[in-house]
Image (tube, rainbow, N blue to C red; front, side, top):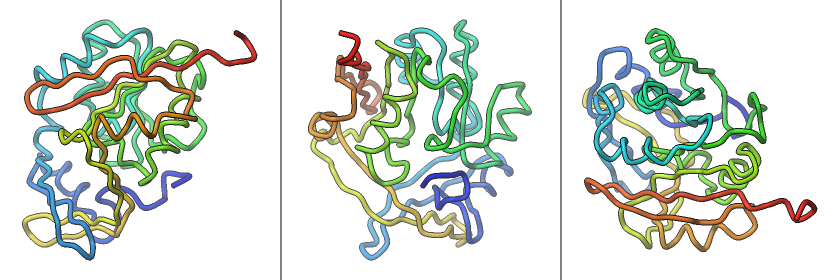
Length: 227
C-alpha cells in the first residue's frame, strides 16, 4: 500500500470503478472474498453535487484541506466553492482525470506517498469509506496525523454501525460482471475507532450523524517535545 500502483479499490482486472467513472456512473458491489458479504456502491453519488451530509463536513473544515481518495472531486469542489484552498489525491487515474477536467487540483498519489506541504494542512478528509484504504486504520490514521499541522483536523466518515471493526480482502464487481483485482479493505464505526486512536497522534473531538451517514472529527495532538 506504499504507492499508487498497489492494490486498491476497484483497480486491476477489468477495472470496473474506472469504467463506471468514465461512463457516468453505475452500481458496483464491494464483495468480501471468501464470505460473499457485499455492499452496494453507487458511483453516480460520487459524480453528483455535495449533499447535506457532505455540507456538514465542509462546515467543519479549518484552513487548507487535503481530500484523500478524492475520487472525481465532489467534496473537493464543494470545499473550494466554500472558500477553502484545497487539493485532492487519489490512486485512480480515471478519478484524477475527471477532477482535473473540472478544473480541480488533484494528484494521482497514495496517502502513503510523499505529499505536498506535509505537516501543514489544516484539515484532511477521509470520506466515502476511505478509512478502509490499505486495510489498516491504525496505520492510516497515524499517517494522516503526520500530514496535518499542529491542531489540524482529520475528518473521517465511519461505518454507521458504531461497533463495526473488521478488515478483509475484497473485490469490486459491476452489473455486467467486470471484476477488480483483490485489495485489502476495512470497515470501522465510531466506537471502535476510539480504540484505534491511541498512538496515532490524534484525538477525537466530535462525532455526528446525518442522513444515515456517520462522521468523526479528530485533531492532531501537540508534539510532546514542544509542549
